[in-house]
Length: 49
Image 1 (cartoon, rainbow, N blue to C red):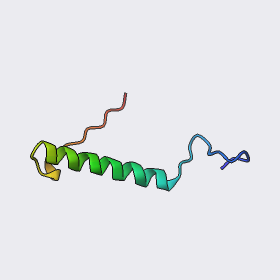
Image 2 (image 1 turned 30 degrees about the vertical axis):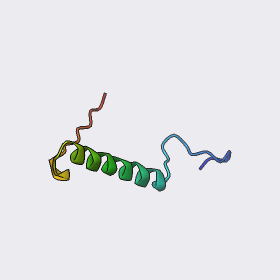
Image 3 (image 1 turned 135 degrees about the horizontal axis):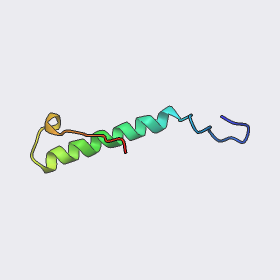
Image 4 (image 1 turned 45 degrees about the vertical axis):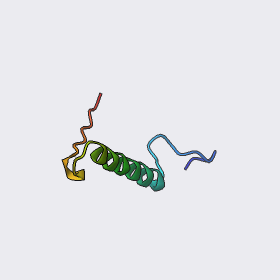
């Protein structure tokens, strides 16, 4: 953390990663339920633009 109390550009709090991961898993579970699929049938594709 820098002297002004903010994180540098390359730093991130682990809680932010945990929350993002939980949100992503919830989205995949909801998608699976909505499309009448199993959670393992939902495919997540990440594209690097």
